[in-house]
Length: 178
Image 1 (spheres, helix red, strand yellow):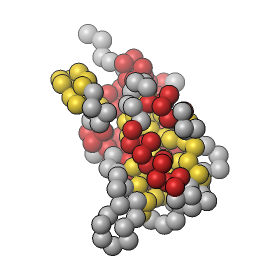
Image 2: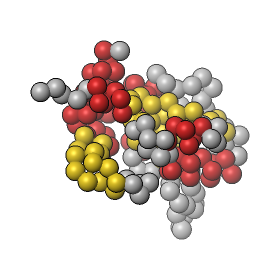
Image 3: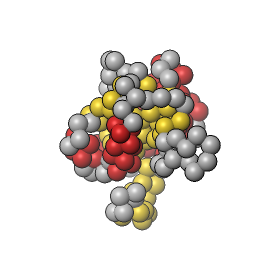
């Protein structure tokens, strides 16, 4: 538990912002965890990937990082675990291979999605739908932060298990007292 507490404190210190922020879901929040701030710090990013690797379910064949914040995470997680990565776009390119999932086939393979922050789960739902249409088996999602604002429940509705390294409660517990 001490390791998670220390990681939560580091992630909070690196990325917690206050103000008025519009989230992907369209909702407004007075706090924001800027994933680019923790993803830009190599030592912190490596420790986050280590924490995420502990939640990786048995039987995982591929890691699918969601554009854009999931890409650095999936890259480090792939290097750490030896599992191949796929890079999942928000929409297919209009040129070249025109793929949603870059890096190789997903059909018939057990793909664990990798995301930075889950609030409502909208980006994960979109990616899951497309990957399942391509024949991928998608049942699990790893994320750095579960904001605990309904995403886990929305994902569960379509058979996804959310496996966060940290939750909003972990980050709140790490808030400096003063």
